[in-house]
Length: 218
Image (cartoon, rainbow, N blue to C red; front, side):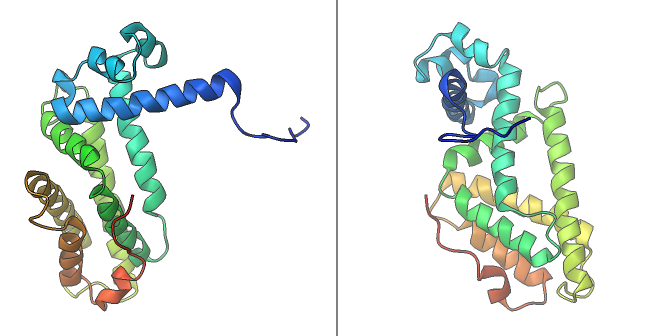
């Protein structure tokens, strides 16, 4: 096949580009509604109203409420994975990415609220997002454990720290800090709390973890 060349090559055009933009607007609105109301109470009608379209028009892009929720969650995780390199050979690089993600989350309270609300709701086995969160937590524990194992291989993990237990505790801390931050955003800094935890389990100067972390920005 001959490669397409010329202006706009490789860029979505016409109806496809418009459809992609509409889908993005719907995802943004759904994130806001689910964050404010939870999945069960958040309605497709409210989401459609926020993007100035009919409910039928919304269902043209996402055939069900569950399909929309899955798309919102996957979109958020895909963006997070562009910030955190879970496959980096240097475990420190992965952990620095997590601190950077925590900084970003502080600029997007709606995203943090969405995950806190849905994670709590999804503890019920019949919740549509139950399997998503079970798999997500298992994946996160494994990713952080591997990062800490790579840190241990280079002598950067403190003696006696078990990577699997430390990974589970880091996630528990992150979740708990997010709830406290949502209740009072002046009470603490999410990234700083994670950094303090890492300082206790890693045997490295603090600058090794912070050198690539800048202030929160939009």
